[in-house]
Length: 275
Image (tube, rainbow, N blue to C red; front, side, top):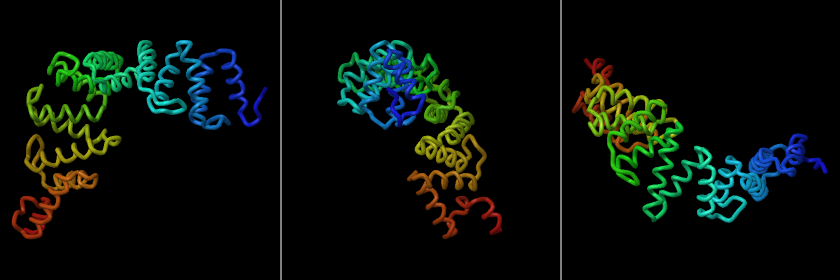
């Protein structure tokens, strides 16, 4: 029987879901999860429909059901069940499930869990996930769950950075600046710090770190032209986002400029104006 408060589409999907259509069951679960198409937001109903589709092997529903167990939404929180359903979805190639499964396995106390986590991160990396590439690189760099391999770690970080993953861009810049895992190259480091600063809008900490690194390079003339005005501008941007070293840099410059003790810390245009 049609429910009057539901949209026509929702009634059609409900009918198909009741008949066992796994695609419709998963859609219905998502709509209950979000409270869309005239349906109330109801996590228990969402989990119930996800389970019906998951039991039929529908990988998106398996991943969604795992999320419900992972977060205790509509079901009792159960990380064991979350792992089980993430694994089912990951085995069918669901990259989101692959990454979530690796995350939970890394929390385990059994060393074999960490080995399995690295295996799933590699799978996610090979399927194009920048997040998986970056975290696989960290495991390779530290020899966590895999044999230590700095060369392969650098390769995965480079690929993730090329695809615009800001954490990888920052890590690659630091490696180039320090000569760690890759040949030292301050000019290339500056390019990657700039990429991290430009693409780090979703991660304020990465953006601020990259901005301050660029400020220091301009301040010292290391890999970039020595430019105190630009150094101060970038440090100010980083300080505005809570970067403490950048804040101290700006305050030190302001103090020395006011006292006239070190005009090198003043922006070039202000030094020239004094002359």
